Amino acid sequence: MSDSEVFPTAWVRAALDLAILSTLTVEPRHGYAVASRLEEEGMGRLKGGSLYPALARLEEAGWIEASWAPGPSGPGRKEYALTPAGRRHREEEAQRWGAFTGVLLGLATTTDSSEDTDGTGATGAGGRHREPVRRTKEGT
Image (cartoon, rainbow, N blue to C red; front, side, top):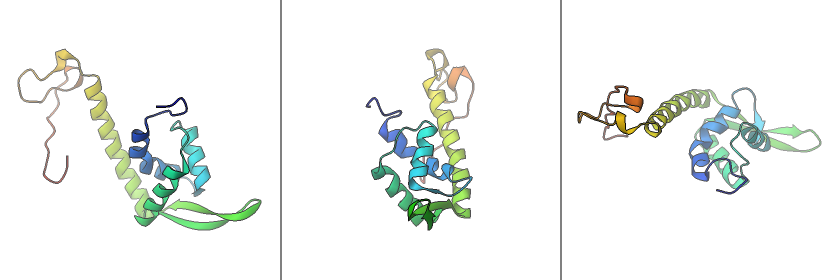
């Protein structure tokens, strides 16, 4: 990780779609404004090679739509806006990320005294009882 990176690149890539969709919840933005907002919020400076392919992927999925808007002093620029499907997807993904980070933080703060002592897999962070995670064939 370089001095200019806030988080490892893999983390940013994994969270990028949700982050982009979240920047568009209030108003449409052009690509540079999306990148600036993400940087302001603490995700670090994105490179165009990450941002624009992600915007294209989100547009192809139907979660955002692009339109040309006049530039303040020059050529027009592409603005991106959430679609209703994108707004729903963002909400669902935010909930899933919240659950995932909760699990990860629980794992990261588990101490030896909170390990599974009865073999059931039901002990969680800080010794609190949690139901074991059940995995299905469809997902994890």
